[in-house]
Image 1 (tube, rainbow, N blue to C red):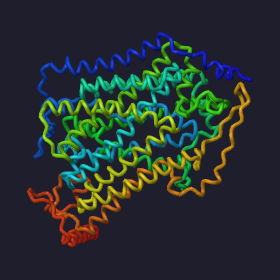
Image 2: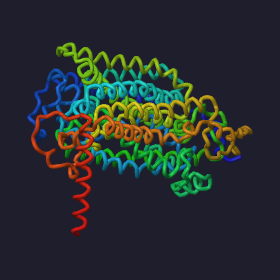
Image 3: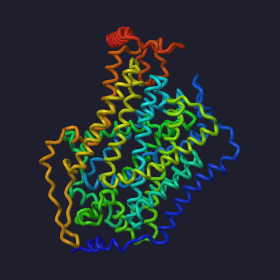
Amino acid sequence: MSDKSNNYAEYSQFHFYIADYCVFVAMLLLSTGTGIYFGYIRKNVKPVKPTINLETNKHKEPDFGSKAMNEYLLGSRRLKVFPVAMSLIASYISGVTMLGVPSEIYNYGTQYWLIMVSIVLMAVVVSKVYLPVFTTLNVGSSYEYLELRFSSSVRSIASFMFVMDEIFFLPIILYVPAIAFNQVTGVNIYVISGVICVVCVIYTLIGGIKAVVHTDAWQTLVMFIALVVVVILGTIAAGGPGPVFKHASEGGRIIFFNITPSPYERQSFWAVLIGGFFYWTAFNSVNQTMVQRYMSLPSLKKGQQSIIIFTLGVVLFLSVCCFAGLLVFDFYRNCDPLNAGLISNDDQLLPIYVMQTVGHLQGIPGLFIAGVFGAALSSLSVVLNATALVFLQDIVRGSFKVKLSEKATNILVKSVIVLLGAVAMSLIFVLEKLSGILSVATSVTAIAGGTTCGIFTLGMLVPWSNTKGALAGAAAGAVMSGWISFGSQAAIGAGHIGPHKLNVSVSECLVNYTIPVLDYSGESEVFPLYRLSFHWITVIGVLSTLLVGTVTSFLTGPTVVKKMDVELLSPVIHRFLPKECFQPRSVSPDFSRDSTAQTSIHLLANNREQSNDRDRY
């Protein structure tokens, strides 16, 4: 038996040292201190006149009821590019990513690494298709666009979907770092979840968007440094990157071109490339947690710069996470910790790896846990702040048309933040029954994300779409993605669908274990849509919304293209619009059935003009 088997046995001997607790507590204190600084100290400093003028157009600046609330929720649109870009990274890179991605690589191979291509494509589309519309209209909430383009009912539906989506995602954010901390200290999961929640609520409550953004910035650096340190030490212990990739190849983990056309394959070339692009675009283009940060910058150019930095940062961070998954496999290639009983959940793989490889180095486990907690705190604060804004701007003021005083607005926003924290804690009990955090989080988010992105895309890229089409499309997208997502989770919970993990070994474990042989023969009887890879849920949601929305718009009387306000449409389609769209007008869109013929005539005429131009050349 090799010496490494002794490391497996000594796991219980590792624990937090004083240095580890000091690093961890310092992270919590610094988070709280940032909130106090921006909530009390910096708040009383007289602001310096900005050197960059905000982009001017006919649309007024976002109004949240008072200048104080504008500052609290958007920073008066005078934040800097780098901290906002770091906050954008923190919006996506949560503990779900830090623990879920290495687990995904360990169990299913490196095919997921291809997501980097999807992320780069997403950045181009978001910065050129969606962001220009929001900055031109100067919206405070992304869902304000839906009322300008369609109606208040469409805005209300999208905002309610966003709030419900974030409520379901909040406990996942809390649960992940609690798992990691419990793994290395034995502290009760519910106790540590409560600590995370209280700290995050305090600094979000006190400091607003400025505290959230600046705390996110240094928390992003902490979690990146923590992961890089673990990866460097792990690589040195493994003998360098060469042996890591060699053992991963021998274990069947190096997979980049699994081009099977089967939509049931969890990680295939097409699922990751196409599904990943739709998922990342849906989240980063119109989700309020992202748009709020775009709109806290003074111009479109600054917003696009933040997306570039965000993309580079996420690609780098996810690449380190993927390599960490290979390190975990290299260490456990001959003694799978789940089958050996060392862990009870796949998402504990990275924490146990950290403790068994660098746990003897005082301060390193504390740094790693501080990184995981930093990821959780940053994601949680982003959700709390953005959801409070949507509840005020889109639900209270938008849906119910309630006009609140400055004092009432302040009380409402901060009460929502506290309430969301309490709801997140109460829902965390549900997650103990679920395994595979990455797929669960993606599936739940896809329901609202795919549908909402479909509605925005319908409005920005399909000029003849109308309110009835948007409502019908939203219903279709929500039903389809919700049906597939919850149906697949129910099938997994009932044991009708297995995980289809790659092979593992227990040959060097201290005790002889038998890896159970799973029978997948009965899966063919499961409803086909329930067997789809989670990557396809967002794709189906977006395409269902677009298809049904477009067809319904034509059948019920599409908007006359010539009467459209060009600022409500993405600049990428401006070249295809009639010149009448660019003339000043104060006429509302025409939704009569007779407009079907006018729209069709314009489209046919436009096609003929393009054909004639081509014939000339």
